[in-house]
Amino acid sequence: LLGARPIVIPISARDALSAKALSGDDASSEKLSSSRLWKRSNFANLESFLKDTLTTETKIKSKLANPVGVVQGIVSKSLDVLSKQRKELETDVATLNLLQGQLETWKKDMNHDMDTFRNDMKNIAQ
Picture 1 (tube, rainbow, N blue to C red):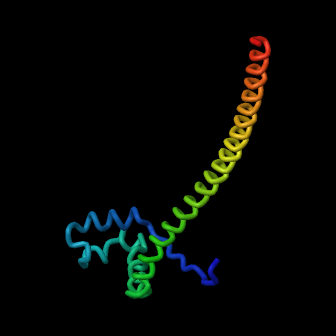
Picture 2 (cartoon, rainbow, N blue to C red):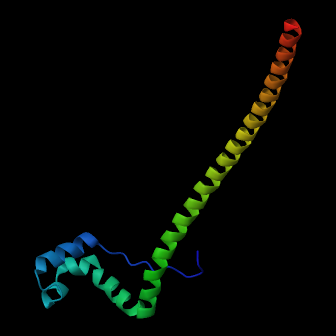
Picture 3 (cartoon, helix red, strand yellow):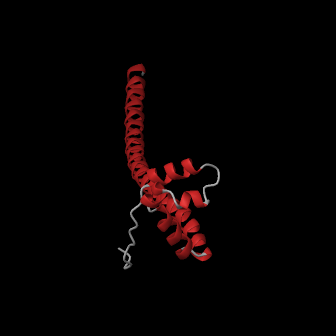
């Protein structure tokens, strides 16, 4: 994906957790490293790889990149929602303008009809 070949280290988290639980409070002891469960878990290789490859700079980049990625996702979703809401509001504005135009036409018609009615009433009264 990014041009780098991924490193795959098969582990058994269950075996590693069991080995650490069995070794007691002193999980870094000789007892843990000689445990058959610990060796089978291959977790020591993973820990060693992480200690060797993750420099302070890499750790900082990783910590900073994750929140930035999360924020980018949130901003993207928010922009999509705002875009949809804007389209709906534009439709609402168009509808209101149409209704306002119809109301103005109705007022003109009513005023014309009232003027005609008043004139008719004046003619009858005279």
